[in-house]
Length: 231
Image (tube, rainbow, N blue to C red; front, side):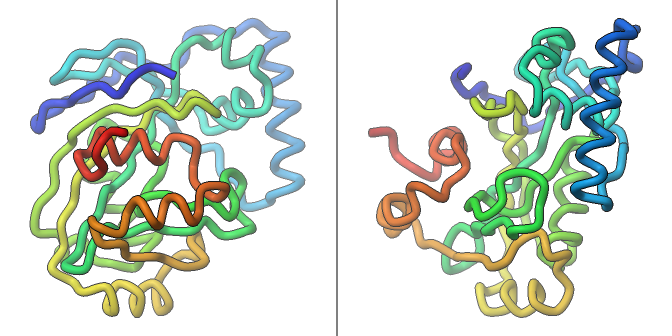
């Protein structure tokens, strides 16, 4: 896994075109995997996903692929090697007065079921990480973007399990934990079965208690976001 990369607060993402031509055999294999996954999870949608082509502190160059490419590369390492580029995601490091918000992924989701992750999170489908993460905030947690009082991109962290590179966005809300839990129950999408709000001093204990149920790169995210000390 590559080490986390620092991002400038005024990060720009430049889309340089769509996917380059893919070998017909590889395309057929991608279609085969996609058809199988859609049978298992009929709600899947082949929307756009940006894949990283180049990186600097203030700019990411990207190409637009379909969600089927992300799913296929997760299922078949040979496809990941053939495509080469890595998909981009976005994760909000959301803090409220009581601490950092984590979501436990529901058992019905396609990937990472039952795992704890910073919430909200999703794939990057357009070249604006702020807009995307605010959309995920509203959809997944039911919390309106107007509840956010500050936000900025801070780092790029790769997931060693699937190669997705997550843009971490630090976000702050004045909404208390009880209100976040209320709107999750009332308006959340079902992406998360529950949330946990963990104070800074309690983070090591929370991580140790849930070690087997954390996303593989969760600690790296917290280190890169300045929320967890190294060591």
